[in-house]
Image (cartoon, rainbow, N blue to C red):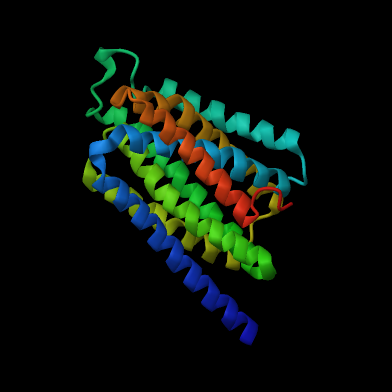
Amino acid sequence: MILRLALGLTAVLVSAGAFASALFGGFLALRAVGHVGLIIAVGAGIRIGAAYFDLIPEAVHHLGGSLDAAMLYTAIGFLAFYAVEKLTTVHVGHETAAELDHGQAAHRHIGVVGSLGMSLHSFLDGVALAAGLAVGGGLGLVIAVVVIVHRFSDGIGIVSLLLASRTPRAEMYRWVGLVAVAPVAGMIVGLLLPIPDMMLGALLAVFAGFFLYIGAAELLPEAHRNDRSRWVVLGTLGGVIAIYAFSVFAGAVGAH
């Protein structure tokens, strides 16, 4: 009974931290809209870094150590997002001036699809957190810290994606709220109904593919279109390095 109460209290505290972290990151990005190119670049770096240093390694672990399977699911995620984007004409549009009418609803779908993917990733982080808390010890602490810090980056990342697709501010607030609530819901589901490792690994790899496409094919070109200075490059590299450094520090890289 005492163990269950301690687990529940820990879950509540970590959920509150993840929720606040995502909101803070999102609102911070919203207040800095004057530096939209740099914000988008940092968001791209965060997405790319999270895919390479967090999602793919974790997917390999949950898939029984199979790098081949993880890369297959990553490719499926990448190509699926590409196909959805092109076949539904939701491309953000930065090749020609004629395509830059981002105010149209069709061009905002890329932000909706990408934000939904990020929210689902946050949900899966909550599921992983529930598993880590159930195991206890250092693993639970590492996953808790990773989830909280990554929710801050998700708050920034989701705003950067929505800024790139010219989403109205009121709608941005709703998506920031969703990505903040998602890990809480995921943790509740994970505690009540654990997801099998193989399924969790496949989903993490698919979202890695989403993030790689969003970061490289959508956010980076949009960042350079908004800001042609060297700060965009430095912001992108900074986002990648920051995620990698924290992952190493928290034990997310090489932990398995």
